[in-house]
Image 1 (cartoon, rainbow, N blue to C red):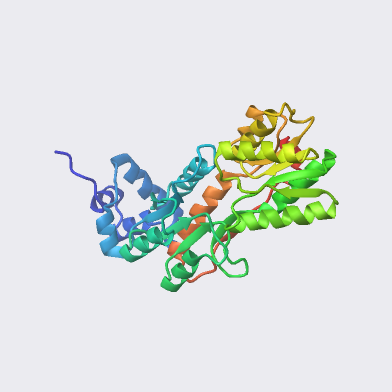
Image 2 (cartoon, rainbow, N blue to C red):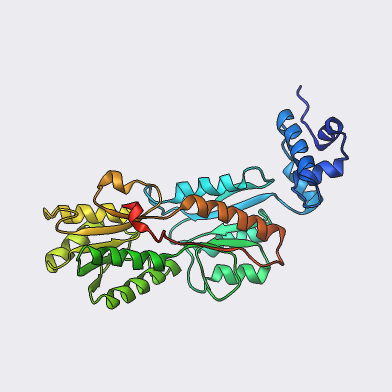
Length: 334
């Protein structure tokens, strides 16, 4: 029968006190880097795994970061890479990543309240952030650590990691202007989410500045089904043959839009140019003529992990806020 390694085992092998071993594994700031490395090396060699129940009894912590994601994400979006990047950001720390899902149509407060009321995580990460998001107000009231992929109330001190979607829209419109496109069809993100509002307002301002027409596609958003986006794009072009450019914020939306105008025997890069945001370097393989602006999800994931740990360990300190901005020399993506 194998005996499970314990803190006492590491203590005996290292010659350090059990309390020192425990604090080293918890990345305590008063423990030297050399001691932490020594303890971690021994722990890895003997296959030490912390007893979460024991940790919780001793410290009140779970060593769990819970990521709450909707189940309606499409296969071509950035969800998988974001999850992987968050997990990598927690690597080498005492924290583990748990996934909690909520389903379309369900109350998004439900998983938040469950985790807070059961104390099943030390901090939360969530996305699809709304302006004045009720989840934010609830978590602040409960003094529960959290960070967001997106912004809710920009003027408040809340922990978040975000992409500058306003700058993305500005760059996208300017790229189409350089291609001498004057009638742009925009497939917007959901307008109940903060990033969608930011992207649309910036696109409108930039189009007005350059005196070009911006047409907001009706009925659909970039989260709509591929078939609905494709059909709507076809109908819009049939009804307005001046459309010569498309702006969309997702790879799925871009692929569906291309399918929509190619059904009309229009050629990408000649009859119509399209600008899209991509996080997985896929669109150029689909159609090389698509103008791509990259979003670095690896950085976002690592920053979200950092922000969540900071929120859990330093609840009374300044929250981490990080905005990833599109490259100024965006021609490198084309």
